Image 1 (cartoon, rainbow, N blue to C red):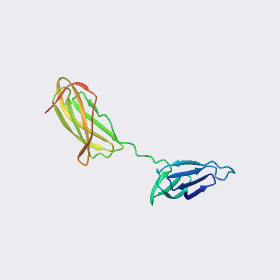
Image 2 (cartoon, rainbow, N blue to C red):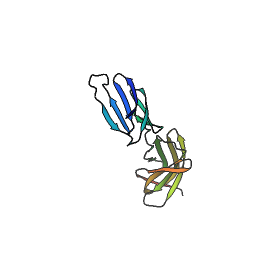
Image 3 (cartoon, helix red, strand yellow):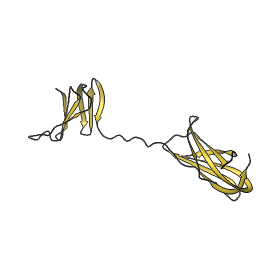
Image 4 (cartoon, rainbow, N blue to C red):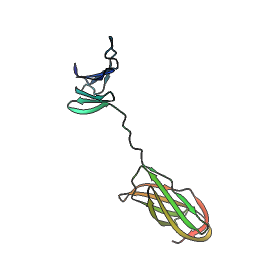
Length: 175
């Protein structure tokens, strides 16, 4: 048995029933309108309907309102943490940059390490907008392969960790 009807325009009429169905027509004024039955609530009574426009329908399902149809709601994009970059200039100054988007980051810990070794050194990073930059002075030495790891923190909790590509340089840093 139909329990409620709403017709927000001459090109849309929607009814609901006591068996969880939504009955709709895009040609309700025609001599022989076409009706489509869609079950949206199992066998639960739908006791009300409201159509603020042809794009938004609100159903009353057992006295609890639920959105049955309406405009698509865009979800925010997921957080994105970029791969950090590491550059080493001729004076053996290590510079690391880490970026992110669609996320709140309170701090970034940048750590330069010698690939294949336990040797590492943390950089002090400065956050500007959605990037963090850190520098570390080094000195000339035999060639090593370096990388930087960026740890992204929000409210003191690690939320992501990314590692750069390797960089070869005849440099070293103080431990």
